[in-house]
Length: 253
Length: 326
Image 1 (cartoon, one colour):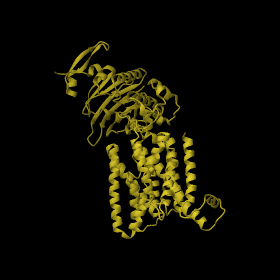
Image 2: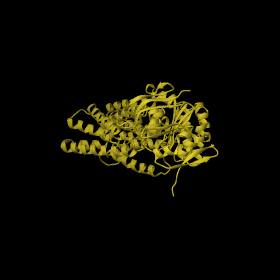
Image 3: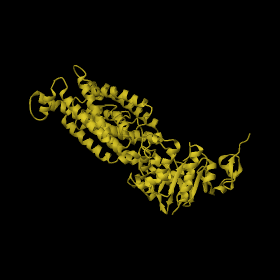
Image 4: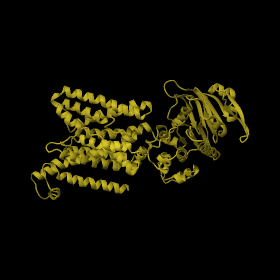
């Protein structure tokens, strides 16, 4: 298994680069949360990895290969993607929607990989259901299954549990943890800092295109850092299940 | 279901074509028409009416309908917008503006018109792509860009007509759409354009499906979005331009045919493209036949009929609650 390395990367939308000389290494087989305020560069960082945005300078290496030298399909075979916007305007069946993940492989709709991915995401029973009729949680699992069929072991997810209720948030986050234990590397943009602290092993905290902290989640979250990055006061509460304290935004009456 | 639908559409179109051959100011019976088609019977005026007047017109309307229906499905996928079709987005107006300039310059109609239309439509397509996709292709931006382009081009057309009063009537009639001047040469050109459009783009059905996803996702799943979008829009714009250059601007077929097909066979382009073309063909032939026979003397512009049929159907589809483009 390889890793993902950013080497002196500058770039972003528009003429003024958001990232300047960014260095970053993400170990394989980890669950990394990407956090930071709106506009800090979380989604842009993902876009640089799957080449929706090209860096102005520097290079990004996936398993030792410069992604700039990889074709879009080759890259798609190595990186599974769950985007922020999942339109379900068109009445594809869930299985057809999942099968789209095989596009870069020539699109074999009967592939056993599709069945396996649907089983992993617990949506086998929805195979013939139109995605226009799915609930938010079901649709999100379809989208995750599609990412698994892409065949890569790196998963990029941009706010995958937004708009989901707690039960569905838990089901998606637990599934991502299971995938990490099976060898996947998960990089997940999260706005919810509690989810980041509970589920991710590592956290990258961004502010204005710079990495403020990167390391084990329990060390990244501190009162000072939350104040610096989010301008919020926070307090600790001990979580007996995790066996460690987690930070909550303080509510002053 | 899909095969049955295609067979039904082909049968209906052929039956309608046969009926259309018999209909017109000169009443020719079905039996007589069939015997003329089989090479027997009258070789005088009726033979001429069937083979030289009605047949090229029927073939031209069928092929044009097929091209517009197919192109509509391509536009809707490439721009990820169910409202997109060459007519609404101003691509047809771009083509028609090109032809109006060709008319004013006195260029020949078989070659000069299509070339002028082609330049007008491709320029419009590129302008729409450049203007609307700067802001990540928001639906509203795209439609408003199309509406704005339509306004500019129609103002320019009016200006051209005012400046060329002797061509005024010709430009106006042609801009409303008519197959009354269809010739076999035009049929051959459109058949060629249709083949060049249908064969490569039908094999790109998986890429067309991928274009229905949001741009970030389709890119991350391996689609080179901008390149594919351009590669499918250009042939669709060119084929539309050729049809417009011969028969004027005929709206709503490109919008209606894919929507009705999608309701029946779903959104997968593997199954959607053929019925879109067949529906387009049937609708256009039906509209042209009505345009030909509704008035006692003279005929209506076919664009009037397609709009009269198209708008109610379109509003019905929009109001039908559960319809979500498939």
